[in-house]
Image (cartoon, rainbow, N blue to C red; front, side, top):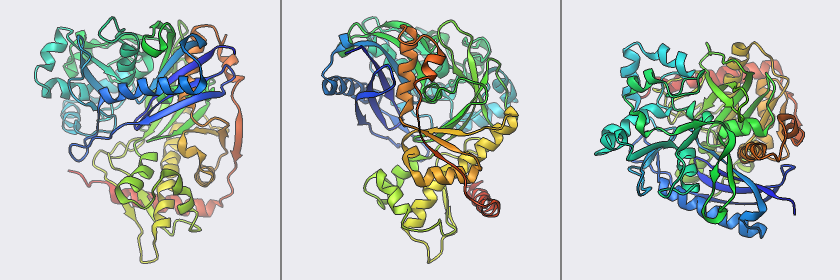
Amino acid sequence: MSKLLGALDQGTTSTRFVLMDKSGGIVAKAQREHRQIYPRPGWVEHDAAEIWRNAQAVIAAALAEAKVSARDLSAVGVTNQRETTLLWDAATGAPLHHAIVWMDTRTQAAVDRIAAQGLGELVRANTGLPLATYFSALKLAWLLDEVPGARERTAQGAALFGTIDSWILWNLTGGPNGGRHLIDATNASRTQLMNLETLQWDQELLRIFDIPAACLPKICSSSEVYGECVGALAGVPLAGALGDQHAALLGQACVNVGDAKNTYGTGCFLLMNVGETPRISTKGLLTTLAYQLGDAKPCYALEGSIAIAGALVQWLRDNLGIIKESREIETLARSVPDNGDVYFVPAFSGLFAPRWRGDARGIIAGLTRFSNKGHIARAALEAAAFQTREVLAAMIADAGVEISALKVDGGMAGSDLLMQFQADIIDAPVVRPSQLELTAVGAAYAAGLAVGVYKSLDDIAAHTRESRRFTPHMTPQERARLIASWEKAVERSLGWAI
Protein backbone atom coordinates (compact mmCIF):
# COMPACT_ATOMS: atom_id res chain seq x y z
CA MET A 1 0.00 0.00 0.00
CA SER A 2 1.29 3.48 -0.86
CA LYS A 3 1.47 5.77 2.12
CA LEU A 4 -1.66 7.61 3.31
CA LEU A 5 -2.35 11.14 4.49
CA GLY A 6 -4.22 11.87 7.72
CA ALA A 7 -6.39 14.83 8.65
CA LEU A 8 -7.84 15.70 12.03
CA ASP A 9 -10.98 17.75 11.42
CA GLN A 10 -12.05 19.43 14.66
CA GLY A 11 -15.45 21.02 14.03
CA THR A 12 -18.05 22.89 16.04
CA THR A 13 -20.10 19.81 16.90
CA SER A 14 -17.70 16.90 16.40
CA THR A 15 -14.15 15.75 15.79
CA ARG A 16 -13.17 13.43 12.90
CA PHE A 17 -10.00 11.75 11.80
CA VAL A 18 -9.77 10.86 8.12
CA LEU A 19 -7.26 8.69 6.28
CA MET A 20 -6.93 9.57 2.60
CA ASP A 21 -4.97 8.24 -0.35
CA LYS A 22 -3.12 10.50 -2.77
CA SER A 23 -6.08 10.67 -5.18
CA GLY A 24 -8.31 12.19 -2.47
CA GLY A 25 -10.19 8.95 -1.79
CA ILE A 26 -11.22 8.33 1.82
CA VAL A 27 -9.77 5.08 3.13
CA ALA A 28 -11.13 5.26 6.70
CA LYS A 29 -12.66 7.76 9.10
CA ALA A 30 -13.97 7.99 12.63
CA GLN A 31 -16.07 10.72 14.23
CA ARG A 32 -17.25 11.65 17.72
CA GLU A 33 -19.54 14.50 18.87
CA HIS A 34 -18.78 16.68 21.87
CA ARG A 35 -21.07 18.56 24.23
CA GLN A 36 -22.50 21.96 23.43
CA ILE A 37 -22.54 24.00 26.65
CA TYR A 38 -24.98 26.92 27.03
CA PRO A 39 -24.43 28.65 30.39
CA ARG A 40 -26.66 31.62 29.50
CA PRO A 41 -28.67 32.83 26.50
CA GLY A 42 -26.20 33.73 23.74
CA TRP A 43 -23.29 31.97 25.47
CA VAL A 44 -21.80 28.88 23.80
CA GLU A 45 -18.86 26.91 25.20
CA HIS A 46 -16.90 23.70 24.57
CA ASP A 47 -14.83 21.57 26.91
CA ALA A 48 -11.40 21.62 25.23
CA ALA A 49 -10.21 18.66 27.30
CA GLU A 50 -13.16 16.63 25.98
CA ILE A 51 -12.27 17.68 22.44
CA TRP A 52 -8.68 16.46 22.89
CA ARG A 53 -9.88 13.13 24.33
CA ASN A 54 -12.20 12.74 21.34
CA ALA A 55 -9.34 13.58 18.97
CA GLN A 56 -7.21 10.80 20.42
CA ALA A 57 -10.14 8.37 20.26
CA VAL A 58 -10.98 9.03 16.60
CA ILE A 59 -7.32 8.84 15.54
CA ALA A 60 -7.06 5.40 17.14
CA ALA A 61 -10.42 4.29 15.68
CA ALA A 62 -9.60 5.31 12.10
CA LEU A 63 -6.18 3.66 12.21
CA ALA A 64 -7.80 0.48 13.51
CA GLU A 65 -10.51 0.57 10.82
CA ALA A 66 -7.89 0.87 8.07
CA LYS A 67 -5.63 -1.69 9.80
CA VAL A 68 -2.66 0.67 9.54
CA SER A 69 -0.27 2.36 11.95
CA ALA A 70 1.64 5.62 12.09
CA ARG A 71 4.39 4.25 9.83
CA ASP A 72 1.84 3.99 6.99
CA LEU A 73 1.26 7.77 6.95
CA SER A 74 3.29 10.34 5.01
CA ALA A 75 1.95 13.33 6.97
CA VAL A 76 -0.97 14.65 9.00
CA GLY A 77 -2.87 17.92 8.68
CA VAL A 78 -5.28 19.68 11.04
CA THR A 79 -8.36 21.73 10.30
CA ASN A 80 -10.62 23.31 12.87
CA GLN A 81 -13.55 25.45 13.86
CA ARG A 82 -12.25 29.01 13.73
CA GLU A 83 -12.37 31.89 16.25
CA THR A 84 -13.20 29.55 19.15
CA THR A 85 -10.91 30.71 21.94
CA LEU A 86 -9.23 29.08 24.92
CA LEU A 87 -6.50 29.50 27.50
CA TRP A 88 -4.63 26.59 29.00
CA ASP A 89 -1.91 26.00 31.58
CA ALA A 90 1.48 25.68 29.87
CA ALA A 91 2.80 23.26 32.49
CA THR A 92 -0.15 20.88 32.83
CA GLY A 93 -2.22 21.37 29.67
CA ALA A 94 -5.37 21.94 31.71
CA PRO A 95 -7.78 24.50 30.20
CA LEU A 96 -8.36 27.50 32.48
CA HIS A 97 -12.00 27.77 31.34
CA HIS A 98 -14.28 26.24 28.77
CA ALA A 99 -13.43 27.35 25.23
CA ILE A 100 -15.64 30.24 24.08
CA VAL A 101 -17.17 29.23 20.75
CA TRP A 102 -17.16 31.43 17.64
CA MET A 103 -20.94 31.97 17.74
CA ASP A 104 -20.93 33.14 21.38
CA THR A 105 -22.26 36.70 21.85
CA ARG A 106 -21.17 37.54 25.41
CA THR A 107 -18.73 40.23 24.20
CA GLN A 108 -21.36 42.46 22.55
CA ALA A 109 -20.96 45.18 25.21
CA ALA A 110 -17.20 45.27 24.53
CA VAL A 111 -17.86 45.52 20.78
CA ASP A 112 -20.15 48.49 21.42
CA ARG A 113 -17.60 50.15 23.71
CA ILE A 114 -14.74 49.90 21.21
CA ALA A 115 -16.99 51.03 18.37
CA ALA A 116 -18.01 54.07 20.44
CA GLN A 117 -14.31 54.96 20.73
CA GLY A 118 -14.21 55.26 16.95
CA LEU A 119 -11.77 52.35 16.50
CA GLY A 120 -13.87 50.18 14.20
CA GLU A 121 -12.33 51.43 10.96
CA LEU A 122 -8.78 51.04 12.27
CA VAL A 123 -9.52 47.44 13.25
CA ARG A 124 -11.04 46.69 9.85
CA ALA A 125 -8.16 48.35 7.99
CA ASN A 126 -5.57 46.29 9.87
CA THR A 127 -7.39 42.96 9.90
CA GLY A 128 -10.05 43.02 7.16
CA LEU A 129 -12.64 42.22 9.83
CA PRO A 130 -15.46 44.32 11.33
CA LEU A 131 -15.85 44.69 15.07
CA ALA A 132 -18.09 41.79 16.08
CA THR A 133 -18.52 39.17 18.78
CA TYR A 134 -17.51 36.57 16.18
CA PHE A 135 -13.73 36.95 16.42
CA SER A 136 -11.22 35.79 19.04
CA ALA A 137 -9.70 38.99 20.41
CA LEU A 138 -12.60 40.06 22.61
CA LYS A 139 -13.26 36.47 23.69
CA LEU A 140 -9.65 36.32 24.88
CA ALA A 141 -10.00 39.69 26.61
CA TRP A 142 -13.09 38.34 28.42
CA LEU A 143 -11.17 35.29 29.62
CA LEU A 144 -8.29 37.46 30.82
CA ASP A 145 -10.67 39.66 32.81
CA GLU A 146 -13.02 37.00 34.15
CA VAL A 147 -10.83 33.97 34.94
CA PRO A 148 -9.03 34.55 38.26
CA GLY A 149 -5.30 35.01 37.75
CA ALA A 150 -5.48 34.59 33.98
CA ARG A 151 -4.06 37.99 33.04
CA GLU A 152 -1.06 37.61 35.32
CA ARG A 153 -0.36 34.06 34.15
CA THR A 154 -0.58 34.93 30.45
CA ALA A 155 1.74 37.92 30.91
CA GLN A 156 4.31 35.50 32.36
CA GLY A 157 3.83 32.92 29.58
CA ALA A 158 2.46 30.45 32.13
CA ALA A 159 -0.88 30.29 30.35
CA LEU A 160 -1.22 29.99 26.59
CA PHE A 161 -3.84 31.34 24.19
CA GLY A 162 -4.95 29.53 21.10
CA THR A 163 -7.72 28.82 18.70
CA ILE A 164 -8.54 25.11 18.44
CA ASP A 165 -5.79 24.48 15.87
CA SER A 166 -3.21 25.75 18.40
CA TRP A 167 -4.64 23.48 21.09
CA ILE A 168 -4.54 20.44 18.80
CA LEU A 169 -1.07 21.22 17.38
CA TRP A 170 0.32 21.70 20.90
CA ASN A 171 -1.12 18.42 22.13
CA LEU A 172 -0.20 16.42 19.01
CA THR A 173 3.44 17.50 19.32
CA GLY A 174 3.82 16.67 23.02
CA GLY A 175 1.64 19.02 25.05
CA PRO A 176 3.40 19.87 28.34
CA ASN A 177 6.39 17.83 27.16
CA GLY A 178 7.70 20.08 24.41
CA GLY A 179 4.50 20.74 22.48
CA ARG A 180 4.81 23.40 19.77
CA HIS A 181 2.75 26.56 20.47
CA LEU A 182 1.75 27.56 16.94
CA ILE A 183 -1.14 28.99 14.96
CA ASP A 184 -1.51 28.84 11.21
CA ALA A 185 -1.92 32.12 9.35
CA THR A 186 -5.53 31.44 8.31
CA ASN A 187 -6.62 30.97 11.92
CA ALA A 188 -4.47 33.90 13.05
CA SER A 189 -6.28 36.06 10.49
CA ARG A 190 -9.55 35.31 12.36
CA THR A 191 -8.35 36.38 15.78
CA GLN A 192 -8.63 40.10 14.90
CA LEU A 193 -5.08 40.45 16.23
CA MET A 194 -3.04 39.69 13.09
CA ASN A 195 -2.14 42.35 10.55
CA LEU A 196 -3.52 41.13 7.24
CA GLU A 197 -0.59 42.39 5.17
CA THR A 198 2.39 41.54 7.40
CA LEU A 199 0.89 38.27 8.73
CA GLN A 200 2.30 39.17 12.15
CA TRP A 201 0.66 40.07 15.44
CA ASP A 202 -0.32 43.73 15.28
CA GLN A 203 1.05 45.70 18.24
CA GLU A 204 -1.58 48.43 17.93
CA LEU A 205 -4.37 45.86 18.10
CA LEU A 206 -2.78 44.13 21.10
CA ARG A 207 -2.89 47.51 22.84
CA ILE A 208 -6.52 48.20 21.84
CA PHE A 209 -7.71 44.80 23.04
CA ASP A 210 -5.28 44.73 26.01
CA ILE A 211 -3.72 41.37 25.12
CA PRO A 212 -0.28 40.37 26.52
CA ALA A 213 1.99 39.17 23.70
CA ALA A 214 3.59 36.48 25.89
CA CYS A 215 0.54 34.21 25.59
CA LEU A 216 0.34 34.29 21.77
CA PRO A 217 1.39 31.38 19.55
CA LYS A 218 3.91 31.72 16.72
CA ILE A 219 2.22 32.37 13.36
CA CYS A 220 3.26 29.88 10.67
CA SER A 221 2.15 29.01 7.14
CA SER A 222 -0.65 26.58 6.32
CA SER A 223 1.71 24.03 4.75
CA GLU A 224 5.02 23.26 6.42
CA VAL A 225 6.44 20.66 8.78
CA TYR A 226 5.66 21.94 12.30
CA GLY A 227 7.11 18.94 14.10
CA GLU A 228 6.54 15.23 14.69
CA CYS A 229 3.45 13.81 16.34
CA VAL A 230 3.45 11.79 19.54
CA GLY A 231 1.03 9.12 20.75
CA ALA A 232 -0.79 6.98 18.18
CA LEU A 233 0.74 9.09 15.38
CA ALA A 234 4.27 9.00 16.78
CA GLY A 235 6.90 10.06 14.25
CA VAL A 236 4.42 11.27 11.60
CA PRO A 237 5.20 14.80 10.33
CA LEU A 238 2.52 17.30 11.36
CA ALA A 239 2.62 19.38 8.21
CA GLY A 240 -0.64 21.21 7.44
CA ALA A 241 -3.09 23.43 9.31
CA LEU A 242 -5.95 25.61 8.11
CA GLY A 243 -9.19 26.94 9.49
CA ASP A 244 -12.02 24.75 8.28
CA GLN A 245 -13.33 27.12 5.60
CA HIS A 246 -9.87 27.78 4.20
CA ALA A 247 -9.28 24.03 4.10
CA ALA A 248 -12.53 23.56 2.17
CA LEU A 249 -11.44 26.27 -0.28
CA LEU A 250 -8.23 24.35 -0.93
CA GLY A 251 -10.09 21.03 -0.99
CA GLN A 252 -12.37 22.45 -3.70
CA ALA A 253 -9.27 23.58 -5.63
CA CYS A 254 -10.52 27.18 -5.63
CA VAL A 255 -7.03 28.35 -6.53
CA ASN A 256 -7.90 30.89 -9.25
CA VAL A 257 -9.25 34.43 -8.83
CA GLY A 258 -13.05 34.32 -8.86
CA ASP A 259 -13.36 30.69 -7.75
CA ALA A 260 -16.01 30.47 -5.01
CA LYS A 261 -17.23 27.75 -2.67
CA ASN A 262 -19.88 27.49 0.02
CA THR A 263 -19.57 25.05 2.91
CA TYR A 264 -22.82 24.02 4.59
CA GLY A 265 -21.82 22.98 8.08
CA THR A 266 -22.90 24.26 11.48
CA GLY A 267 -22.98 27.61 9.72
CA CYS A 268 -22.57 28.52 6.06
CA PHE A 269 -19.29 29.94 4.85
CA LEU A 270 -18.91 31.35 1.37
CA LEU A 271 -15.38 32.21 0.21
CA MET A 272 -14.11 33.65 -3.06
CA ASN A 273 -10.45 33.61 -4.03
CA VAL A 274 -9.32 37.19 -4.81
CA GLY A 275 -5.60 36.51 -5.37
CA GLU A 276 -2.45 37.93 -3.80
CA THR A 277 -3.86 41.37 -2.93
CA PRO A 278 -6.40 41.72 -0.11
CA ARG A 279 -9.65 43.52 -1.03
CA ILE A 280 -11.38 45.42 1.77
CA SER A 281 -15.12 44.87 1.48
CA THR A 282 -17.64 47.70 1.25
CA LYS A 283 -20.62 45.30 1.37
CA GLY A 284 -20.36 43.76 4.82
CA LEU A 285 -18.01 40.90 3.95
CA LEU A 286 -14.77 39.83 5.58
CA THR A 287 -11.36 40.07 3.99
CA THR A 288 -9.42 37.04 5.11
CA LEU A 289 -6.38 34.98 4.30
CA ALA A 290 -7.30 32.16 1.93
CA TYR A 291 -4.08 30.24 2.56
CA GLN A 292 -0.32 30.60 2.70
CA LEU A 293 1.52 27.54 1.44
CA GLY A 294 5.10 27.32 2.63
CA ASP A 295 7.21 30.24 1.40
CA ALA A 296 4.79 31.21 -1.39
CA LYS A 297 3.00 34.56 -1.33
CA PRO A 298 -0.21 34.53 0.72
CA CYS A 299 -3.50 34.26 -1.14
CA TYR A 300 -6.54 36.21 0.07
CA ALA A 301 -10.30 35.71 -0.04
CA LEU A 302 -13.57 37.52 0.53
CA GLU A 303 -15.81 35.68 2.95
CA GLY A 304 -19.42 35.82 3.99
CA SER A 305 -20.13 33.98 7.24
CA ILE A 306 -23.60 32.74 8.19
CA ALA A 307 -23.88 31.69 11.83
CA ILE A 308 -26.64 29.09 11.64
CA ALA A 309 -27.21 26.54 8.86
CA GLY A 310 -26.80 22.88 9.83
CA ALA A 311 -27.12 23.98 13.46
CA LEU A 312 -30.74 24.82 12.68
CA VAL A 313 -31.40 21.21 11.70
CA GLN A 314 -29.71 20.14 14.94
CA TRP A 315 -31.96 22.58 16.84
CA LEU A 316 -35.09 21.12 15.23
CA ARG A 317 -33.84 17.69 16.32
CA ASP A 318 -32.65 18.47 19.85
CA ASN A 319 -34.81 21.39 20.98
CA LEU A 320 -38.12 20.83 19.19
CA GLY A 321 -37.89 17.09 18.56
CA ILE A 322 -39.68 17.22 15.20
CA ILE A 323 -37.03 14.88 13.76
CA LYS A 324 -35.07 12.14 15.50
CA GLU A 325 -32.02 12.23 13.25
CA SER A 326 -30.65 15.06 11.14
CA ARG A 327 -30.90 13.09 7.91
CA GLU A 328 -34.71 13.02 8.29
CA ILE A 329 -34.96 16.75 7.52
CA GLU A 330 -35.12 16.35 3.73
CA THR A 331 -37.84 13.68 3.86
CA LEU A 332 -39.93 15.90 6.11
CA ALA A 333 -39.30 18.94 3.88
CA ARG A 334 -40.36 16.94 0.81
CA SER A 335 -43.69 16.09 2.47
CA VAL A 336 -44.93 19.50 1.29
CA PRO A 337 -44.69 20.94 -2.25
CA ASP A 338 -43.30 24.32 -1.12
CA ASN A 339 -42.67 26.36 2.02
CA GLY A 340 -46.33 27.38 2.40
CA ASP A 341 -45.13 30.99 2.69
CA VAL A 342 -43.26 30.13 5.91
CA TYR A 343 -39.79 31.67 6.46
CA PHE A 344 -37.32 30.77 9.19
CA VAL A 345 -34.70 33.41 10.08
CA PRO A 346 -32.22 31.55 12.33
CA ALA A 347 -30.65 34.59 13.97
CA PHE A 348 -29.89 32.72 17.19
CA SER A 349 -26.58 34.59 17.54
CA GLY A 350 -27.61 37.65 15.55
CA LEU A 351 -27.07 37.95 11.82
CA PHE A 352 -23.57 37.77 10.38
CA ALA A 353 -22.61 38.80 6.83
CA PRO A 354 -23.61 40.93 5.10
CA ARG A 355 -25.88 42.55 7.72
CA TRP A 356 -23.87 42.23 10.97
CA ARG A 357 -26.82 42.77 13.27
CA GLY A 358 -26.10 41.50 16.76
CA ASP A 359 -29.57 42.64 17.87
CA ALA A 360 -31.38 40.16 15.57
CA ARG A 361 -32.94 37.00 16.97
CA GLY A 362 -34.51 33.95 15.38
CA ILE A 363 -38.09 34.03 14.13
CA ILE A 364 -40.49 31.88 12.12
CA ALA A 365 -42.69 34.16 10.01
CA GLY A 366 -45.81 33.52 7.94
CA LEU A 367 -47.40 30.84 10.11
CA THR A 368 -51.10 30.05 9.61
CA ARG A 369 -53.35 27.16 10.64
CA PHE A 370 -52.34 25.59 7.30
CA SER A 371 -48.67 25.42 8.35
CA ASN A 372 -47.22 22.12 9.56
CA LYS A 373 -43.86 20.67 10.52
CA GLY A 374 -43.09 19.93 6.87
CA HIS A 375 -43.29 23.65 6.08
CA ILE A 376 -41.03 24.44 9.04
CA ALA A 377 -38.52 21.80 7.88
CA ARG A 378 -38.55 23.19 4.35
CA ALA A 379 -38.19 26.75 5.63
CA ALA A 380 -35.20 25.63 7.74
CA LEU A 381 -33.41 24.23 4.68
CA GLU A 382 -34.31 27.23 2.54
CA ALA A 383 -32.94 29.61 5.18
CA ALA A 384 -29.40 28.49 4.33
CA ALA A 385 -30.03 29.20 0.63
CA PHE A 386 -31.61 32.63 1.22
CA GLN A 387 -28.69 33.70 3.41
CA THR A 388 -26.19 32.38 0.86
CA ARG A 389 -27.88 34.43 -1.88
CA GLU A 390 -27.43 37.62 0.17
CA VAL A 391 -23.75 36.90 0.75
CA LEU A 392 -23.08 35.96 -2.87
CA ALA A 393 -24.71 39.16 -4.15
CA ALA A 394 -22.47 41.22 -1.85
CA MET A 395 -19.40 39.23 -2.93
CA ILE A 396 -20.03 39.74 -6.63
CA ALA A 397 -20.48 43.47 -6.03
CA ASP A 398 -17.26 43.70 -3.98
CA ALA A 399 -15.09 41.62 -6.30
CA GLY A 400 -16.58 42.85 -9.56
CA VAL A 401 -16.56 39.24 -10.77
CA GLU A 402 -19.55 37.17 -11.86
CA ILE A 403 -19.26 33.52 -10.86
CA SER A 404 -19.74 30.80 -13.43
CA ALA A 405 -20.86 28.32 -10.75
CA LEU A 406 -20.94 27.93 -6.98
CA LYS A 407 -18.99 24.96 -5.63
CA VAL A 408 -20.56 23.40 -2.55
CA ASP A 409 -19.52 20.99 0.21
CA GLY A 410 -20.39 20.07 3.78
CA GLY A 411 -23.09 17.81 5.17
CA MET A 412 -26.11 19.84 4.01
CA ALA A 413 -24.76 19.87 0.44
CA GLY A 414 -25.95 16.27 0.27
CA SER A 415 -29.55 17.52 0.18
CA ASP A 416 -30.78 17.54 -3.42
CA LEU A 417 -33.76 19.65 -2.35
CA LEU A 418 -31.56 22.34 -0.83
CA MET A 419 -29.02 22.34 -3.66
CA GLN A 420 -31.71 22.72 -6.32
CA PHE A 421 -33.31 25.56 -4.36
CA GLN A 422 -29.88 27.14 -3.96
CA ALA A 423 -29.31 27.10 -7.72
CA ASP A 424 -32.80 28.50 -8.28
CA ILE A 425 -32.50 31.34 -5.79
CA ILE A 426 -29.02 32.50 -6.96
CA ASP A 427 -29.85 31.87 -10.64
CA ALA A 428 -26.52 30.09 -11.21
CA PRO A 429 -25.32 26.47 -11.36
CA VAL A 430 -24.39 24.71 -8.12
CA VAL A 431 -21.64 22.10 -8.40
CA ARG A 432 -21.42 19.29 -5.87
CA PRO A 433 -18.18 17.26 -5.68
CA SER A 434 -17.92 13.51 -5.26
CA GLN A 435 -16.49 14.07 -1.75
CA LEU A 436 -18.63 16.33 0.47
CA GLU A 437 -16.40 16.59 3.53
CA LEU A 438 -13.66 18.69 1.97
CA THR A 439 -12.34 20.39 5.11
CA ALA A 440 -10.41 17.23 5.97
CA VAL A 441 -9.36 16.75 2.34
CA GLY A 442 -8.00 20.31 2.20
CA ALA A 443 -5.97 19.81 5.37
CA ALA A 444 -4.56 16.57 3.96
CA TYR A 445 -3.68 18.35 0.70
CA ALA A 446 -1.77 21.03 2.67
CA ALA A 447 0.14 18.38 4.62
CA GLY A 448 0.87 16.40 1.46
CA LEU A 449 2.14 19.50 -0.31
CA ALA A 450 4.58 20.19 2.56
CA VAL A 451 6.18 16.74 2.37
CA GLY A 452 6.21 16.38 -1.42
CA VAL A 453 3.26 14.03 -1.95
CA TYR A 454 1.85 16.80 -4.18
CA LYS A 455 4.14 18.97 -6.27
CA SER A 456 1.90 21.99 -6.88
CA LEU A 457 -1.61 23.44 -6.67
CA ASP A 458 -2.19 22.15 -10.20
CA ASP A 459 -1.39 18.67 -8.91
CA ILE A 460 -4.03 19.10 -6.21
CA ALA A 461 -6.61 20.52 -8.65
CA ALA A 462 -6.21 17.44 -10.87
CA HIS A 463 -7.72 15.31 -8.10
CA THR A 464 -11.04 17.22 -7.76
CA ARG A 465 -14.13 15.43 -9.07
CA GLU A 466 -17.60 16.81 -9.84
CA SER A 467 -20.51 14.57 -8.81
CA ARG A 468 -23.61 16.56 -9.81
CA ARG A 469 -24.47 19.96 -11.24
CA PHE A 470 -27.76 21.66 -10.31
CA THR A 471 -29.02 24.22 -12.84
CA PRO A 472 -31.64 26.89 -12.07
CA HIS A 473 -35.23 26.33 -13.24
CA MET A 474 -37.16 28.94 -11.24
CA THR A 475 -38.90 31.80 -13.05
CA PRO A 476 -37.65 35.33 -12.37
CA GLN A 477 -41.09 36.26 -11.00
CA GLU A 478 -41.13 33.42 -8.46
CA ARG A 479 -37.53 34.15 -7.44
CA ALA A 480 -38.35 37.82 -6.85
CA ARG A 481 -41.46 36.92 -4.80
CA LEU A 482 -39.55 34.53 -2.53
CA ILE A 483 -36.67 36.97 -1.99
CA ALA A 484 -39.06 39.79 -1.11
CA SER A 485 -40.84 37.62 1.46
CA TRP A 486 -37.54 36.47 2.95
CA GLU A 487 -36.35 40.06 3.32
CA LYS A 488 -39.63 40.98 5.00
CA ALA A 489 -39.06 38.17 7.51
CA VAL A 490 -35.49 39.33 8.17
CA GLU A 491 -36.73 42.85 8.92
CA ARG A 492 -39.05 41.36 11.56
CA SER A 493 -36.05 39.70 13.28
CA LEU A 494 -34.09 42.93 13.79
CA GLY A 495 -33.97 44.98 16.96
CA TRP A 496 -35.07 42.09 19.15
CA ALA A 497 -32.13 42.01 21.58
CA ILE A 498 -31.38 45.21 23.44
